[in-house]
Length: 214
Image (cartoon, rainbow, N blue to C red; front, side, top):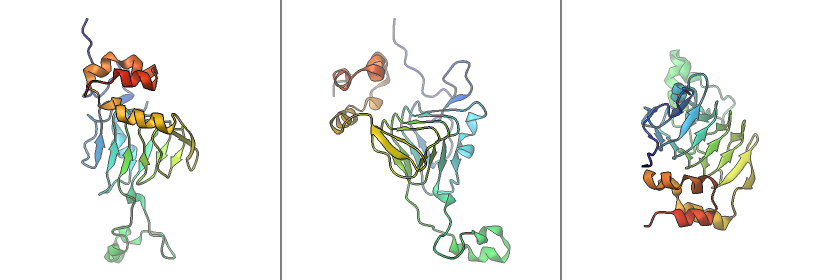
């Protein structure tokens, strides 16, 4: 019987569960890039991800999400458009209120930022996690529910809290390097489908043996 890989272009991949959406076929903003099979789960309206979960996204910074990421309900990305001036007595953005105040728009234009927000491949963000502007979350990382991520997260790191702190690494440095070299998320779908058990429950040695020939 032939193996049939899942389809990365289907909006609702889980039969009977409209609360789960694949993000790549959903997003329309040119400032958001999403890899295959990354999904968001929300019992209310998961299709509103771009407006309800990506906040203050006025550009030009991008949100880049890798492949095979799992986002729990209420995960939010705060983008650089949320910034206010902090170098004077008041942080209030007077020019956006209109009237003669709008003549001073230069006072809030071009606020400094940390660049793109980047989520690696195979990242799990738990329920209600918040990612702040310019954060980079490494491949294979896990962010605990309710965490506020203000700093970069290493590959295969587990973080939690507000602000989120590193709890532990899922693998030691040597094995992380091997996992990054294998990069199973870039395997052809047919090959990945044949080796799902290894990807989900095997050892690093098993994964290396299962990797497609270069």
